[in-house]
Amino acid sequence: MSSIVLATEDERLLRAVAAPLTSAGFSVLTCVTAGDALALLAQRDTRLVLVDGRLNDLDAPLFAKVAKAVPHEPAVRSLHKKVRPLRAAELGDPLLRLARRHATPVLSAEERELVGLLGLGAEALTTLRQLGHNPLPLRIEGEPGTGKEQVARFVHRLSTPESPFVVLRAGEEPELSTEHPGTIYLEGLHRHTDIVALLQLSLARGWRVIGSSRRRHEPDREGMAWTHIRLRPLRERPKDLRPLTRLYLRRYRKRLGLPSRRIHKGLWVALEAHTWPVNLRELESFVVQAATSARGTALSPATLPRRVMERLTPEGRQTEEGRAFERVVEDRLRPVVLRFESGDGPTLHRMVVDATERALFRLVLARTGGNQKAAAELLGLARNTLRTRMDRLDPFEEQG
Image 1 (cartoon, rainbow, N blue to C red):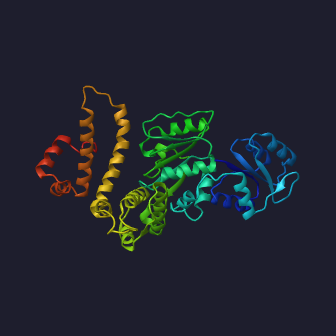
Image 2 (cartoon, helix red, strand yellow; image 1 turned 90 degrees about the horizontal axis):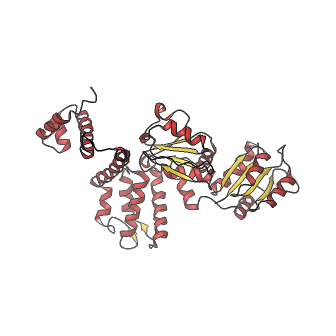
Image 3 (cartoon, one colour; image 1 turned 180 degrees about the vertical axis):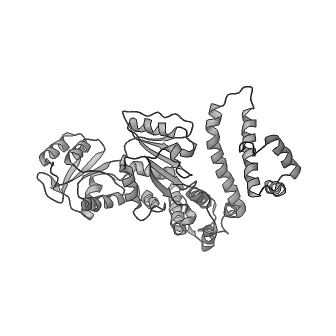
């Protein structure tokens, strides 16, 4: 992967150059002085430098000399104004041809298509590039399966593609090198403790911080210094369902060597009636199963196994929600299990089961307005069994 450096103070020129290059999948690093561009030129991942010929501190002969001296020999072109000995770069298609000749896109055509289907708006790639160059930590909010980590990786690759990308889950200790700083991704901010301390440590060592959460911002826990972006769930943007389905179908047809198949209108009806509670992750999983198990040349309810089509039924939705819940529970239990020490208190199993059941009883009784008969029916328990367990657990003890 490689980067393109753009040096200009002109906002109009910046947009005219950066937008098409970013749309083509290139990493574009921007600065406002020729001196900063000269420093970036020497970095090993820089392959092309575009410098505004009107910059006051531009020393064109020095640029040309340094470009020839560094091992990777980046190309240097002037913009807006021809400055000898630098050759001029033309805007439009010639600029893209120049970029492709000297640099390599950091996002593939498929990835660029996916970025446009994440609900980030028409200028999604430009938005991600700008977020990548924002010095503030980035907070990505969204429901399960909306692609939060994927967006974090795209932001990273559009800004610093050669640097490391480190995922830090709750309960894990960060190992952050000061020699090669990159991006640290805090998965599930709502599950991390001491977030402010993590922020301070990461920033002090030169690391960019991106965090994700399914919950709204909690300033008291997370601090105030965040740039925010929200990923909309799939049900809020139904027009993206068909192009996303086709994208996943093409992806796995290529990866797995599957035959080309069209999607029957009957399957489209079933797909569009589904609410997709686990969003893109659930849709991708469904497409993989459908593509690998279908009979014939079309994907339809008639050519797919019953077990696959059942994922689109209310019962199948409950199964998928159950799997999503299991993943959440596993993430929350990980730090508890890592820190638990056996002793004179309750066993780990008893502690977890009691805590889970106590919370479940509170929620169900709140939903039924305290009606124990209705609560027992919802839980699938006998009323006497519910009373016995409630007497032992005292589910409202925490609330005083």
